[in-house]
Length: 322
Image (cartoon, rainbow, N blue to C red; front, side):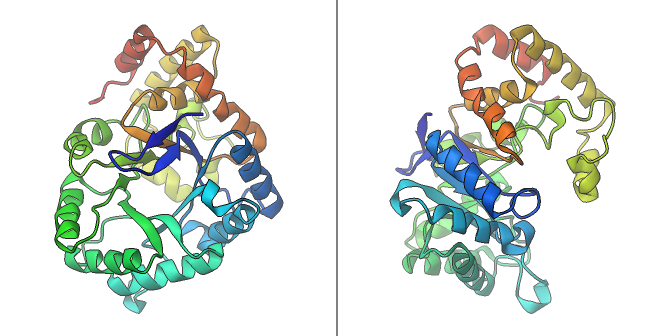
């Protein structure tokens, strides 16, 4: 397992990490969560990610219970604040009130005094950036979080936040959590390019398999019992993004052929490709079984065999502007 700096900043994260979206409290109960986290930790993974919105806070509770067995200084944990309840009751968004109250509730569920990273889970057009920074400053000054970051923010929003944070006397966001995979490349590789120098952000990327598309699950349609059948809103989002269209499926078929030629799984090849990007600090894995986790872990070995020729073939199948 490789450990990488978070951009230019001093925080070190394992190159693979464990997330909890759609799995903790849905597919996995406390026993399974504990087994997964302990297996991940034994394999060298030290970064674990969750959010207040994941299964109504249940994911945070389960993660906290499982992490209690480990030494707090031996791992990094993050949570994300934005969605909890209705905006008219001040329970969503990035208002100073919700940032502080939301993280306070998250810490209670996690049973921790602080998280290492708190993310602003999405940009909030209803709240001035000055107010967002005010809430983050309180959180950092009180030690509720050690660092802060963003998730799915535009480059311009991150630049504005960095400027105002420095004016407020706190560090800028050190990390962004975007979707990044072979089918979704442009934001990470083009839009964010200036941000790797200033403010020097790292990346903790999610959806390495594009919600299972790059695992080949949906080449022939949506199978019964699949994640897309279980979560129709996710299916709708992928359809609107063009990721379930015939053009995307043709690319996935070519990807399957390449994986078969190499003698590796599509899952391992998709994750290994992300790990080759030096701007990526950690790839967040979303697994619903130990068997899936073990397959994902095999990407570390596959990464060693991604030659320039293989990377060129992948670029041809999945161009940045494709």
